Length: 265
Image (tube, rainbow, N blue to C red; front, side, top):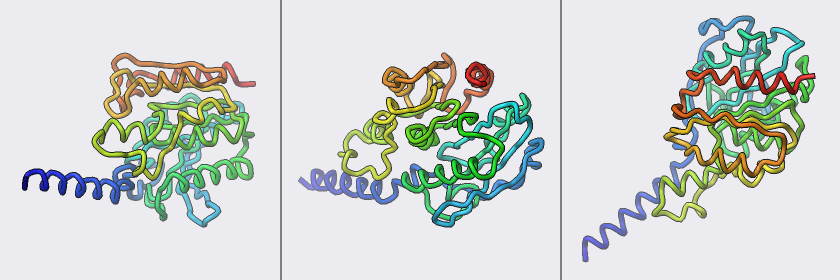
């Protein structure tokens, strides 16, 4: 009998820990990344994008060629923007303009990341583009990486962009949690759902989905499900050997550039 009580106690104890610390698990906050020059980024400057609740988001802006699109890069849930330098450099080298955004709580920014707060950050970025950049929204590519796909999809339901690009997207955080913690009623416990599945058919812009078929963090089938439900003009790039974090080793930037230049006017 004592083993039964011990198992019950352990079940509830671990469940409480998961509930209390779920945002620490989902949002791996990071420290200050340094300056773009430290990562050999060309023509890139530090800027700060202010949210309506007065959080300053450190971001890196590269203006190269006004005749090319602006790619807005929303990072995933770990590390700082410096760890994305090698990714955006591939676009800069092709004379694309890039705005690399760091969330509140990341890259030394103040504030606490939550689903609602990341949507606020995304809205602040859109307002900055409208008021401070050289580009219209229909000249802008919204690129979401992993967790960043949640914000990209949300903004994609509110605005019309040149395109929305989703790298390693998930149907929802709830679906990820169900698979990872099947013994818990996660439907009632997850605070930040980022429900891409319920929104993907409401996008206003062409869609490109990129996924590794061997993704060990977000199962590839999430991308297939989202691809099938989306109603806009859409294409996919599914890489046979890729996992979650190595898609750029397979030259996916070439696919992103090709897809968008066909839309560019």
